[in-house]
Amino acid sequence: MPKPKPGETSLRDKIIERMFDALPATTMDEIAQRVRPKMSGYRIPTSYFHRALAHLRKNPEKYGWTVPHVGGDSTQENRYFAMLVERDGSYHFDQSPSSMAHLHDGSKSIVSRIATESANQASMLLIAAKHTRKRNRRFEINNLAMDVEYIARKAKALAKNMAGDEDERRVA
Figure 1 (tube, rainbow, N blue to C red):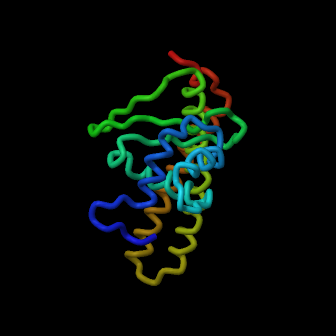
Figure 2: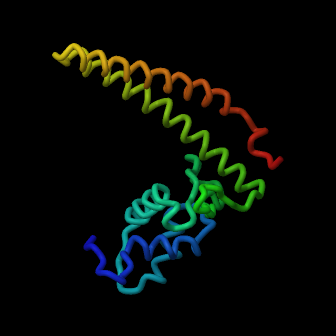
């Protein structure tokens, strides 16, 4: 994507701007179908919407909003929803039962991903440490691997606790 000239808005920013009006939605395809007609002159693949969403999630302060992580069940209606983000980091969103359930499902998904990826990364770090010649570097890598293993264990335990926890899905 070419860098926009001063005063121009990038294609990604235009997509993010229009995504807000396309929410809530059940799938990324649904978001893309709602946004594409508003983007005349562009042929935008759905994968580009995924990248725009990733950028939005990394930069909520720039846009003033974000979309929380969603769980893996793509049949859940309106699982993508907007969450307004203030400059101080506070946020506001529709705290309906369905939004709260989607937020909880997204949190469970994140915790499960952290557990799996951290365990895999710790294993690879331990292998790398065994093949590192410098003693100090090997020590540092082993220490990091132990820290990552600790995170993996904590995330695994939390994921297990969250698995059947329906109380978190209800509005207080």
